[in-house]
Length: 137
Image 1: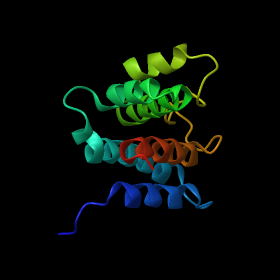
Image 2: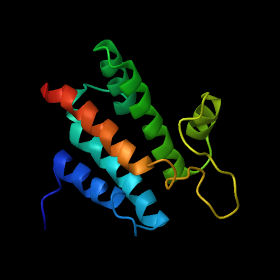
Image 3: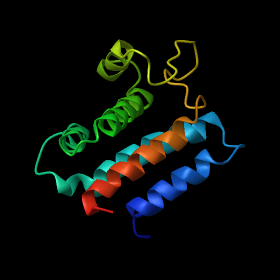
Image 4: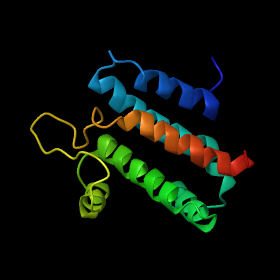
């Protein structure tokens, strides 16, 4: 059995997929969900209780990183949409103006277009930035 990836390794793996021009949509979608879920699992211990990404958003906002806080939370919502489909997270994203991501409602396609506008690369960047708030680097 291999040890779980560190946060740095996790983000590097996602970044490699983001930089792979041949990565297919399903690989990108899986990487988004895995990266967000594992990021939460690796850093959950920084918060006593409660929903990790809400607590992270509050921490970033309190430290003056309002745009980063919103961006990270939006990526969390997007990962939930990819994982669970339509629901509360999608409704929250639909209310945001301007839309932070390309939402699509086409038969057979995910509700978030992860191929548009460097979605995965920007997700990795936001998580890397937010990760730095835990160790002050």
